[in-house]
Image (tube, rainbow, N blue to C red; front, top):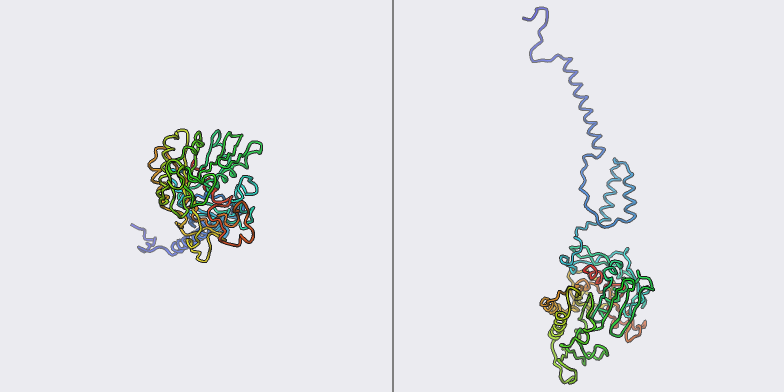
Length: 445
């Protein structure tokens, strides 16, 4: 029972003072919560950013300075934060390619990337071993962009040429390039890539008409070249004669090949001398019968006969446990400007940039010859590794000696340089494209 002197509060209702106090408390809490949300928002805690990806390309000094400046900014400075993201996004690139593995990487599939910050390891002035035929700058070529293109395979990273590493790999060994003037182009490139790190008294060069030898004395290593444009013998190996009178002895190689034994690394090529545009005169046995004993074959047939002779010599002579054998695929010629869409041009004259069309293939690379090489090598017992230069070189219409060369032992005159027909669109400027061939070779060693 409730005493009669105490008023009973009405059921279901709260006293007014309690309602007022409760309301004030709730409003106060709401204000505090709103201020907290505002504080959190201003400090960007809920502002999401994408996870940073791995950046493998080195940052420039300017980028590093920008990063340091950004780190010094206050965390709450939203604009500064956004500026850093923009700088990094625009000046860095994502490289998800794997490290170079010759078994996995297809070096033929890629693109040329212009990099003005990369300079060649040598010049045709600093390296004394470059033929005048390949010395484009010394011969008057003024544009320089062709020296700053890097080959970038699509699915792997191609290591840059390291001369010290190359010499260590060659220590106590003989490296011999065998083939035509394009192979000499590659040989001179390799020599120039390494010779500048060797003191003068520890290196020497012996130039011969057929066999030339560069010696790195401190490494007990030699880098050699042997002139054999067909690999097999011909009547035009030494004393070069008119194309129409050349006869190739497709079954004879022993006289040349006796100079290729005892070598640790052999690099062969043969292509451009076969591409005369006429049927090839071939012979078996002796040259005693002169021109009366020859037979004419289409180029792929004659080439296959000669290459089988080379393959038989390799299989019967070379011990793969002691000697590695490489074959440089054909170096393309660029004598028809219509191949890359320059309808008004003449050969490679005045070309200053690579072809950018993917998988460009011109008339200067004969796929029939490529097929012959592939089939013959596939049947060999001794492993032969291809240095696949054809596709990547196809793009480089800008890299040839062009009119900055010599003919008949004499430099072209100003008047002769003005004539596009005088452009040499077979051989390459040094430094230049053959440096990339050797970059691939070194990565494979």
